Image 1 (cartoon, one colour):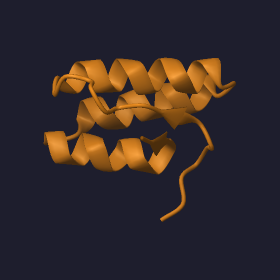
Image 2 (spheres, one colour):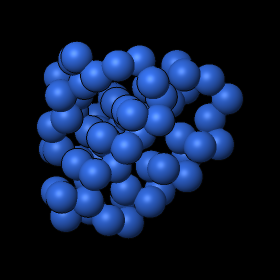
Image 3 (spheres, helix red, strand yellow):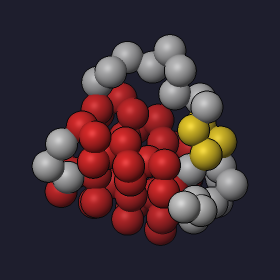
Length: 65
């Protein structure tokens, strides 16, 4: 599966709080020049039914380290 962007986000060391992950990834997308994708990402994550689903969306939008 390819990501939509080449934005790299370091998630190692981020606490397991799903909202922290969404915020960190969203800010990285915005800084990377993808404000519309950041909004799309947030909407999909907030509609997700599980933590695992949020992680799956995350990996579709950014390169996680």
